[in-house]
Image (cartoon, rainbow, N blue to C red; front, side, top):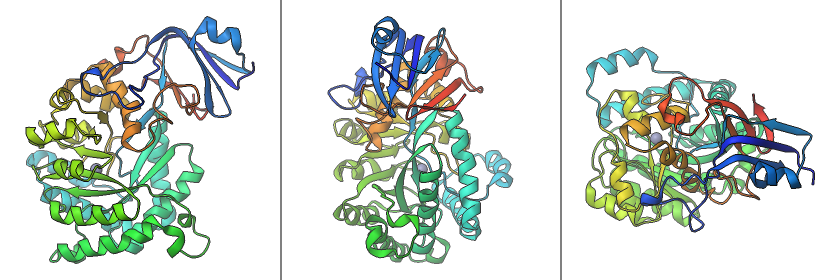
Length: 426
Ligand SMILES: [Zn+2]
């Protein structure tokens, strides 16, 4: 039979199979389902065959065939946590912050507000262009699906403008974007004395975001943009658990799925809130106490860990990944690409950091950066694994063995990127 594209003879083809129709949990994390001398065929943007080269080639041929001898083939990376839509930078502040060494949530919030001012002032075309260049580099480093949060707007007008930028990029960039509304990132300048008042504002913004067609007029793309997730920063410098709960309850009423920035700087009740609200993910978890890790581990909420954030701030405290796995949790990895704490566009670097500071094996980190990350953003069953019928989002890595992933760092191991069956890099 004829396919559109056939990749064959891979030294290791990593299938990354789901377990029991879901993410790989707890100590079972790290099952790559490796096929030596493996092949994968794609047609109409989907995977149509996976297996040993001899068997796949017996049934399939394609006008484009790629010899992956001596290389690793795996699913495209899924980055489940980014704030990639912003304008400007805090480069001038970087040296000072690193020298001072002490980072608290309140300082982090001041930094976010500086980027909010720059983002509000930037024309839409500039915002789209700056974001597009970041997405291009993410794609070059193997990310094929990315979650994208708002949050550098913090008023209904400016948050909707960020969604407009996301809507433009969604139709003009090969990456798949999954939008998340993060109106509750920090309290903006104009509400510093009245955080409860701003919480009310966020609650008022939710219908505009959840049901865009009902509220937005004219030809703007956001009329039809689907925003599946609402996120809240429940931490020092952000929102209290009580404020966060009010926002999340309203979002849930409107049919949105939930996410929580939990306990990055302080134990703040964020992880417990995420479990209580049956959130899709609880993210960061650097300071989450052991009893909350236990509850998270036995829930369906995915723990999204972001080691580039601690690294980016020069901090030595990382999330308790081993404890999450011992508790049976589903663990995923993301870049947290943002303007203030983690301008990181590279999932291979995140894997290298996760191996060292979260004590994950390369196999565990690869599953956390693909299959499990897809479940954190509602795309389980669609991307993150080389399964027949799933999206043909595939990487060819210029390494002979998966153990080189994480072991090597600072250069890009991604040689080719196939997005929905088309070669988009290499
Ligand atoms: Zn974040």
